Length: 605
Image 1 (cartoon, rainbow, N blue to C red):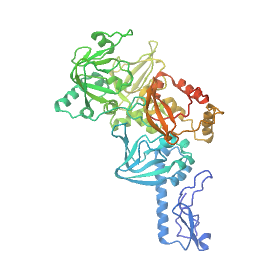
Image 2 (cartoon, one colour):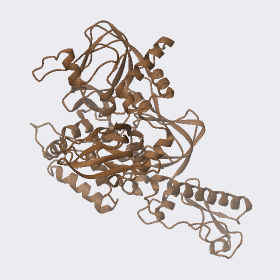
Image 3 (cartoon, rainbow, N blue to C red):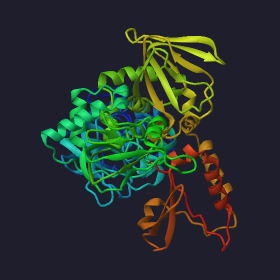
Image 4 (cartoon, rainbow, N blue to C red):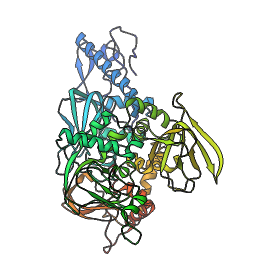
């Protein structure tokens, strides 16, 4: 696309202007003319230069050294941008002949340290790719100070949510270091180039590490004495469940101690309720006694001894059915995102150290960089996960939990509902169907071989087709449950079907016609309302599947009720078809006696 010359003059260094299709935007492409100053245009004593607006104007005279240097720099900058975009993972699927168009429509934007590029809650019209430098991602919960949740580096991108789904900005992006250099493209050009269909954007990890759309409430860490720090460390080391799953080294212990905050708990307070799906915290007891109980089907409490047998919960060195100073509870629900297995109630005024889900999982289950590389390699061995983008595979690898098993231990049981997927990276297991051995699976950590089983659990909870039992002295595996996968990237089935989208006009028309079929053709009053046009007023109420909030249109001042539904909970309860049917039916109705559905939105949170 550059360096082509008529050969008439050695002074010509300008590139040919790439020829654009008629539908493409005529943005500021490499600014040169075809040929050189000695060609027809120059022969008449006229040459072409670029106006500041990107257009062209005629100017008398001949090409001078300053203009030639400027043209060389411009050409060099364009080629540098082209080379950079070719290395960005996001654009690897973009046809090579589209890269010059993309590069010519992207504008270099530089930001100073501490400067906000986009702000949470604002409407967005720009998409950014980081060319050089770093940026931090900040999330602010309502009424709380913003928290830094991630750092973006060269090759990372942000701002796609506003352009793809008309969402308000979900986070604030702030420049770090000396300066941040980005490439920016506007909504208009983003759409005109067809990028929403031509690119595959990785699903962003939900903030909060779980909870299906809830905003995790956290508090600043509390100051601690040396005795309190030691108590927390010993409580963590005494928790058999944690030590079975992860190795609690000194670094992890120090990080856990640093994030905990202190809570005063009054007598009779139920800290954990059996069956509760909202499991956001892990606790260490500083002072006081807590009773652990499990309810029978007829809602009668079991004795302390029965509770111990049924729930397998106890505090090390403490009476059965109670947790006292130095004990801990609540870890299993956080690690596996399952309902609380028992109720825990304060028997007296007490003091707890509290750890939130996000910090808990990040510290205890996040592997080192070296291990993550191995995990990514193991994830790449699973054919079912081939359609995932590389960035998504990295997120999966980071989220997987190490689990160690002893000889004779059963990992999967035939007939049980499937919820967890395993990658065996060291050890040997046998596969049995109807109590008959059908094969064995071997993995060796030293030579880097791995096997997997239970992968279909990421798609559905069908009963396990076989029993998997450890036959080696020990077996090491990586595990990931379906709920955590869904909260991280969304349902796997959606990601698999995503690969069918080619970005063609026909595909876009099919999606449009599907929307039109749901609309009542006689309903001309149902106008389009974008999410950015609405302003949240407050909460109306909560139902079994989500919350209903009051919104006001910024211009018309009309008010609407918006029901937010947790995708994770819908998938957990198998209600996907019901939700889609509800939407389809309401979009087809047009009656003064039925609440009108004006719009639906799809968000990542």
